Length: 272
Image (cartoon, rainbow, N blue to C red; front, side, top):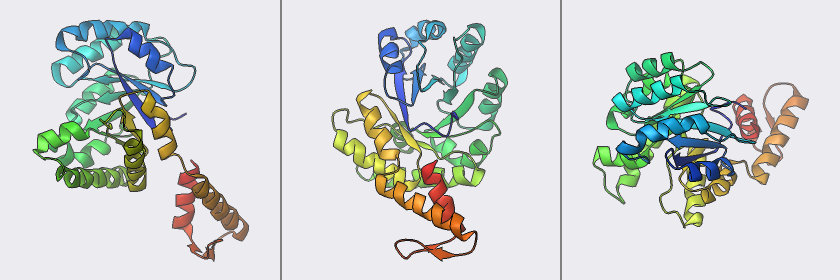
């Protein structure tokens, strides 16, 4: 499946914790992101890089790596270039990506088959959105809401309005650039699965394709929240059937609403 388009849940796991990496690889996450950045202490980063060589395989789903910015990021790329990761990796998440200079450097260091997903988590990244999403190697972006709110100086609960504004900007920028819809930020209340489901549905309604998670228990909730509901699937199938039968032009659906090319496009997107 396409690295950037088909995943709904992206599970972060510390790269220096082999036991947790193995557990994550066996989870229901559509993509597992082995983290070399925030989840790994500075003195443990060399060991985390070395551990990439023994990254477990997956029977299904994808394997990604989150790399640092700056000097640590260059060390991450050097490690990826000097070891053989069995089966390869599907993508890289670029922490603190603020411009295309770093994107160019990363793109030159990894094969074209590796998807690049900048993590938008600073004010500078928001200001550079059009350039970032327009980079030829970028397939999708992730939104780092916790770091972004800290960088912007926002406070809760009012900061939620600020974050929502950036969410909308990112959805629009991604669509305008013709790349996959973005991935939302993590839900920090580990045990509140109801709130996770609600906030995930809100992200889906805004146009996000999925979200990052930090616990395996979140994966099934997120996968379901971002999947079309039975009602949505039935609607989309009916729209496409009516459109294909009619051939062209505008017509009415089972609910009496008009069907045109824009509605057909939305139905196709829902069905993947």
